[in-house]
Image (cartoon, rainbow, N blue to C red; front, side, top):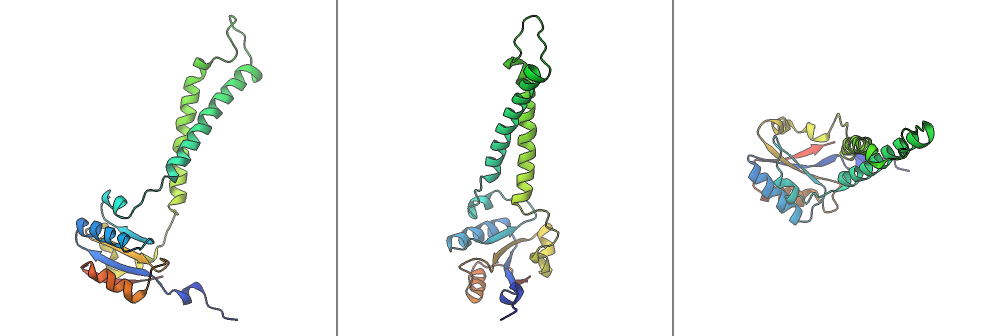
Length: 184
């Protein structure tokens, strides 16, 4: 029986290329996706909305969870207000109905917004895998420039198309400033 850990099987997290400009990174990300790589990420000092299209990142799960949260929040707020008005504390004042839809609109609206906002924040945090106090890309010496002026693209070893030599050759064909291995 072998006692190999995941570290023994894949000592690398991936291969990282460094680029000088945002345009070079977006072009590299587009070529990487076109080459068939799917498990790769880009790191930039500024938000680049073009990367979403270049990397084909169109995940609508946060939107879906937010919609579900809004529906549950609105229906929960209306149900709570109706229950209080009709069952828990019924007050018949001037012959008005116990359940009056216009009276519950503010409560329904506020509960919709509250639960949708909380659901959006919590689902975004969880789907992004946060909190993440350590990431293997921090092992690359030059990666500190990712928060100042440099742009990085990392292809992970978990990608089905990953082959060490072929991936290094592919990244070098994108004309980066440097290609480095990312240790776990």
